Length: 506
Image (cartoon, rainbow, N blue to C red; front, side):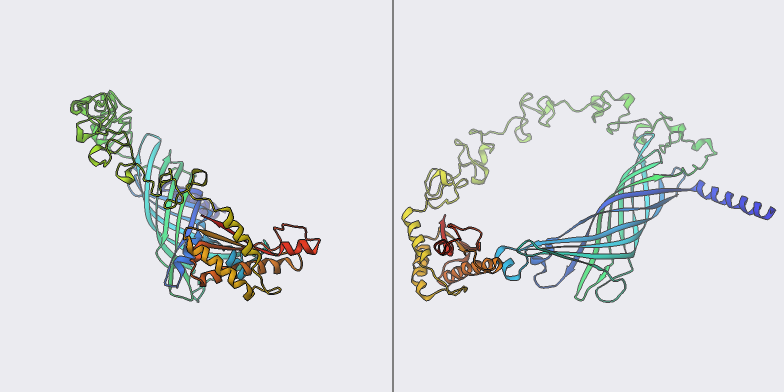
């Protein structure tokens, strides 16, 4: 029994001794995690890279602190934290491509769970008796726990499909390495040695994934952490009075003009709230940084232009240093000084060297407001001309004359002469743009009609491209049975609904 009591007493003594030297804390926070991927895959930058985004997640764990110096300004802070990392992917497809591959959008996420062990060296600088700023950096090691990837695919009809897959660990191809490492840093504040609030950044230097293609994969994390310290570490007692420092500002009491208040060497240990190097007890403006010649107050600047009154030739009018504190000459008041203004007597814009915006087509709207700057129009149509009524009537006639095979997107050869006429109209006026719309009645499957109407519109666009019309001047859309112009309950109405619509605009 005596041996048991002795063992317990020794254990309690050891634990108390450790706690006297070590601070233990509980921490948690949130972070934004992303992946830096580099590879030489064809089309990566254009088709994939910009569709990845960061994941929002959290971290939680334990932290410790070992003091390095007497005052505790320097310390070693290791911790063990659960971190959730990874990235998201989201991409949508335009209507034409969506019809072809039956995919409207893809959303995916990679959720990777780790135990991170940061090993930071931190430095703390006192801002007040209760608050210190904290800076730290060091390496970290990350141990892979598990992970999964989730996919959600939406087709052109709004139908969803999804799947989740567990992620393998190891050194094999398409596996996640069990250990990776990198560097991290932190900056924040410590309050009364009980609470630490920091912003954190980390980046892995080793690739955490082995792909079946050449590439590297590195974690990047931005986060915010809050640590609650469960105990104080005992401060080392200073036996030599010559080194006594009651306010712990690093200045011995025998050299400290304010031994009970935090200060700096520049102010002989006294507080300096505005940080201008002049102690508050000698500073007539203790809350505003100033100069010694003005007893700690800022240099007088009556007009607030940043130029001292004793160097300012226009003390009450804001100006420029090059003009000795007087305003920059600007005769037309357009904010462009006369020496750089090509129209100094007429207000203008910097883009046009001080001159007004031009009106190339002379329609009364300047080029900045005119959506058709080289073609006269009117203000109601943003400077663009109105498509003439007779031209619209011609297009309606052409649209009624475009025929296709039954349930086919193959254009009837009888329609070629009308499409050639349409190409001629487009060729004659390069400013014209064309919207091609395909429509069907409600007979048959909706999906078939949707696809068929889109293919017919694309067929007309392809024909016009072959005739030399630029593809960027045309859009092709299929609406299936969604926009009827007559009742689908009669054969006459269904005939009217099976149509092509051609719409011109500038």
